[in-house]
Amino acid sequence: MKILNCPLNGPRNIAEFIYGGEVTQMPDPNACSDAEWADYVLMENNTAGVIREWWCHAATAYWFIAERNTVTDEIIRTCPAREVFQARVAFDGPAEEGEG
Amino acid sequence: MPFGLLKYGFARKYPAWRQFPPRPDLKPSYDVVVIGGGGHGLAAAYYLSRYHGITNIAVLDKGYLGGGNTARNTAIVRSNYLTPEGVAFYDEALRLFQGLSHEFEFNILYSERGHLTLAHTDAAIRTSRWRAEVNTHLGVDSRLVFPEEIARIEPTMDLSRGVRYPVLGALYHVPGAIARHDAVAWGYAIRAAERGVALHPMTEVTGIEQANGRVTGVVTDRGTVKCGTVIQAVAGMSSVVAKMAGFKLPIRSIPLQACVSQPLKPFLNTIVVSGSLHIYISQSSRGELVMGSASDPYALYSTRSSLEFTEGLMGHLLELFPFLGEVKLMRQWAGITDMTPDFAPVMGTTPLDGYHIDAGWGTWGFKATPACGKNMAALVATGKVPDLIAPFALERFYRFQLLGEKGAASVGH
Image (tube, rainbow over the protein chains, first blue to last red):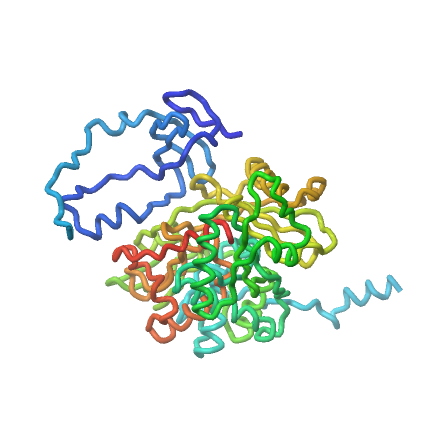
C-alpha cells in the first residue's frame, strides 16, 4: 500500500485519491489564441522527473498539490493549493458569442 | 553420443544461427533514422526497405530490439473499435497480421480465437450494439450475442445470475486473435536487416539536431548521425524524445500491468474482455493465462508491479472463472503506455520538417504494428499522408477534432 499525505486528512492509502495531472499555468481564456488554449487543455509536459501535480482526496473532495518524482514514484511533499494559488481566477470576462 | 553432440555444438563448421547480423558501426549519415527498435520502428524500416526501395536506414534503440512495450503487451489483435477511422485502421492491421507469417517466412504464431467483450449493464449493451453496427458497416465481423450463445462459445465461463455483475450479453468479434509479440518484432528485424537496414540496439538517442525548422541529425551515445528524415517510434517515452525535437505531445505516460499464470491444459477458446469489470484474459499457445486489467491510476515512468493490480484483477476475474482460484501466477510486469485524451494514436508529421511521429500508443499499440509501420513508411517515402492515418495527425488536437475511441479502447486491449 502506498501512502499519500493529504494536507487535510493526514496520511491515507493512495487508492483514496484521484490524480489530477500536472500543475500548469492557465492562459487568460479571453486573451489567448485557440492554439494556446489547445496547448493548455490537451498538451502535456509529461516530465520524467520531479513535477508538481494536482491530487484530490475523493472521500472529502479536497484538492491539493503534491511534488512527486515520476520516475521513482517518490512523493516528496504535499501542500494545500493556497501555497501556489493565492488569487482567485476571474472568469468574468466578456462571453464569446455563441450560436444561440 | 552426448560427447559427439558437444563436439558438434562447439565445432566451427556448424556455427550457431544468428537471427540478426552483429551490430555494425554507426555510419556518419543515413537516409532515414528510426528511433525505437520495437515492433513499430522495425515494421516501418521493413516496409521502407521492402516496398519503397529505401535501404539506407538505421534503427536505433537504447535497449535491445523488441525489449520495450513490444515485449510487455498482451499480444491481442482485433479491429472491433468504435470510430470509423479506428475500425478502418485496425482492420488493415488485422488483415496484415493474418498474412505476416507468410510474408516473413517466419512463424509469428498467429492464432484466431474470437474476442468476447462482455456487457454487464444496459449502457454496455448499448455500446456493444453501436460497435457491432459500425463494425458491420465497415465489413468487420462483430455481432451482439446473448448468454445462450456465449455459453456455447465459452462453456467454462460462469454465466449464472447469482454473481455481483451478471453477463447480459457480449460483442463477439470472430477474427480476434493473439500472436507471439516477440516474433513479430524479430520477423520485421530479420527481413529488414536482410535488405540492408542497419540495426543499432544499445544506442541511446540524446538529442535531435535541427536547422531552419528541419531535422538534420540525431545525437546518440555512440556519436552523431546526419539524416534528413526521422521516424520516432518510442511509445512509452514519446514525450521525452519529442521534447528533444522541440514539441509537446498530448500524452500522459501511465503504467499498464499484466500477468501470466502457470500453464494449464487448453480450456479457454476466446479472448474474454470485460470493460465494466476491468479485466481481460486469453490463453497462450503455451497454456498460460495472459491476464490484464485497467491502467494504473496515475502517471509514472516506472515499470514496477503492484499488489493492488493483482488483487483488483482477481477480485473480478474469479467471478467469471471461479475454478482459477487455486492457479498460481508465474510472472507480473508493467509497460508504459502513451495515453492520449481521445484514446487514439498520434501518427504523421510534426512541427519539425522531416521528423515523423508514431506515438500515442496507449493500450492499442501491438495490434496496430503492421498498419502503422506500412503507413508510416508510405508517408516517409512519398511525402503524402496516407488517408488511413490522416485522421490521427498530431494537428487534430489543435483543430479540436478528437477521435473519441475510449468506449472501445479503454480496457479491451
